[in-house]
Amino acid sequence: MATVSLKNLKKVYPNTDRKTKGDGEKKHNLTVTAEGVLAVRDFSLEIADREFIVLVGPSGCGKSTTLRMIAGLEEISGGELYIDGNLMNDVAPKDRDIAMVFQNYALYPHMTVYENMKFALKLKKTPKEEIDRKVREAAEILDISQYLDRKPKALSGGQRQRVAIGRAIVRSPKVFLMDEPLSNLDAKLRNQMRAEIIKLRQKIDTTFIYVTHDQIEAMTLGDRIVIMKDGVIQQIGSPQEVFEHPANLFVAGFIGMPQMNFYDAELIQEDGKYTVALETARIVLSDEKQAALAAKNTPPQPITLGVRPEHILLAGDGENRIHGTVDVSEMMGSAVHLHVNACGHDTVIIVQTMDLQGPNRVAFSAGNPIAFTFGGNVAHVFSKETGENLE
Image 1 (cartoon, rainbow, N blue to C red):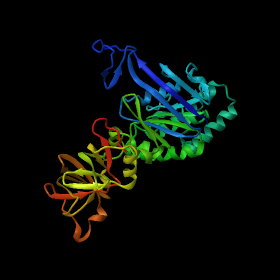
Image 2: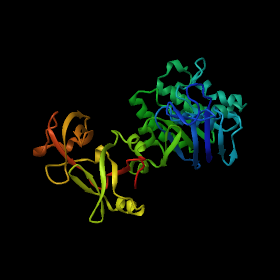
Image 3: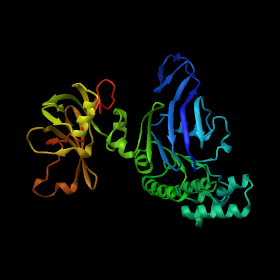
């Protein structure tokens, strides 16, 4: 159990590309300076004792590099790392009192499950009785007691990952680091292992830092989510906060599945109220959004409007309706995902199948016209110039 403090952490790799001169150019979406390629920059985060933090973002955004700097597997180019108030920049990985679970399990193939799990404790010359107790306790927690005499090749992917987690648990580390531990598993196993990690967190009660590119893992596991892009933090918040109040267009598009719909629209003021104008529709924003925009003295302007697929409502003809044409209808079991050509964009609308019964059922065949609307409380207003959320 420990607090972790990251202050202006930076990671710079040498620039081996002679074509980029190091004057702020972009290389694979990362900034190149005179020092080299900036993989992570100005990363600051305070992690509370026993908190579960998830670093999430697309491939190459710097999340695994950040985790490896915390682990001591990557040298810190700048900034400071503290664990329980102690500066760790130059402390060897073995002395940081952390345990790491890797994407590829990293088990010793010639050792049994029991031998794999006890290996780190054996190196520390822990008494045999204590080793046996800790290994069997961890195996019980992870429901792998029956596999202790097997070797990794005789286990499934999910069982191997449990062994890798068990090997970390027996060390009773201050900080538990997990680098995309579920990415090698199929969808069904990932769902099961997500639930297992939630249960595990409740049982071992330590600080977790978890890296993933899967937003579902991030939303279901994390107390707080750190969303990264191109080595820079975009937003830090609870899953609910980043879903309901995305800081910018990137976060809005990254969090949520299917992703948020975006439109070219206008923010106007009618009768003293902020209103979104989209084609012929006029949607008055909610009181909460009115207050946020008024507090910043936000002027009327062209905007990017964002609306999540689950917040769009089908509607008949009338005022404040947006019209489109159905392109594709996907049956997803409990819901239908409609891809609609509207306002020059592909719009995704989620309709619950239970709402489609009886005489009001709408025909969703390709080419059919459709009308929809949304409330002012679910409209997200982004700056056309900067992409920042104007609220």
